[in-house]
Amino acid sequence: MDQAIMNGVTQRLEAVGREIRRVKRVGATTVAMIAALVLMGQAVPPKATKVVEAEQFVLRDKHGKARAWLNMSDGSVNFALADTNEKTRTLLYLLDDGTHGLILATQDGQTRVEVKVGRNGVPTLSLVDNDGNRIGMFVLSDGKPALGLVDRTQKLRGSLGLETDGQVRLTLSDRNATERAELTVLPDGTPRLSLIGHSGRLTWHGP
Image (cartoon, rainbow, N blue to C red; front, side):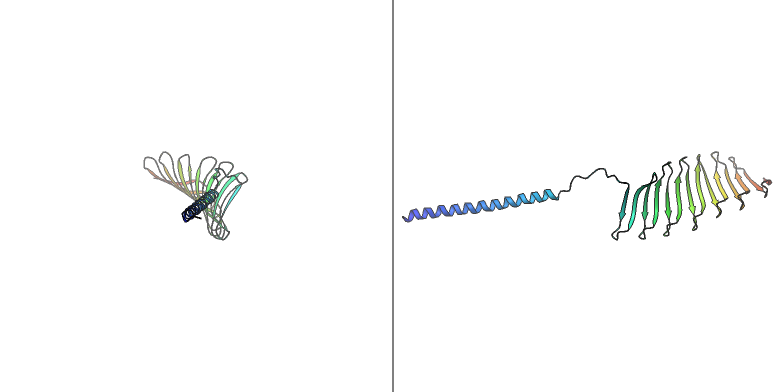
C-alpha cells in the first residue's frame, strides 16, 4: 500500500481514538454528576410535619433519664422539669376547671413554693415548709393585696392587708386563730390600735 495512504489511515484512526477517549471522559463525568444529584436528592430531608399529636411527650438526657415531659392527666395539662435523679423540680399545670399554677420543689420532690390562679381569677402565692405545711401566703382578691402567716396546724396567725380605700390593717391571732390585736391606719392617716381578750371582746381601743 502506498505510504501516503497508510499515513492518512493512521491519522484517521488516531483521530477516532482520541474522539472515543473524549467521549468516554465526558460520559464518565456526566454519570458522576447524575449520581451526585441523585445522592443529593436523597439527602434532602422530607418536608417537616407542622402538627404532631400525642397524649405525652418525654424528653430524655444522654443517660436515658426523663428530664422533662408534657402530658394530659384526668383532664389537666402538665409540663414538668426534672433533675438528674428524675425528681420533679418545676411543674406547670392547668386543671380542667381553669385553675392553673406553678410549683417549685426541692431535691426531695417536696413542694416549697406554689403560685396559683384559681378558677375565680384570684392569684395566690404560697410558701410551704419541710413538712408540706403552708406557712405563708400572698393573696390578691378584688384588687386588695393581703399577706398571711399560717402555723403548722394551718391556722391563720397574722395578716397584713391593704383596702382599696387606702386603709392598712395588721392583725395578730392566738393559736386558736382568735384575733387578739389589730393595728389599723385609716385612709386619712389616723392610726388605731385594738386589743381583744380571749373571749373575743374588745378590751382596749385607741387612740
